[in-house]
Length: 136
Image (cartoon, rainbow, N blue to C red; front, side, top):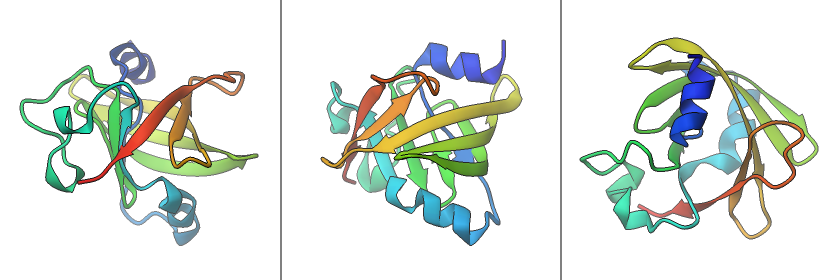
């Protein structure tokens, strides 16, 4: 099973882990920084202080942390290969690693005016999944 499909099946969304990402790429990620969680789940059930995942990990929580040039979920870590703008959306191309296998994935994100973040399954998705930002 490809990593991208595994991540979607688990509902985990995104992960990044890159060092030495160009400053233009870091700039594209700057507005997306923080701990993000699907709207229907209380932040304190998933995140502890500083936006880290609580232990034991809830492996099926639709949550992720973007910190610097990294995005983490309970199951994976991905390096950002590139960030492309498509209107108000950011399309992140990722190199991911899970306990199962490495592989490539794509994350499509859009920051809303209310501060929330939407993740889309593909370019044709017009609904997306809403995420709130949790404070550490």
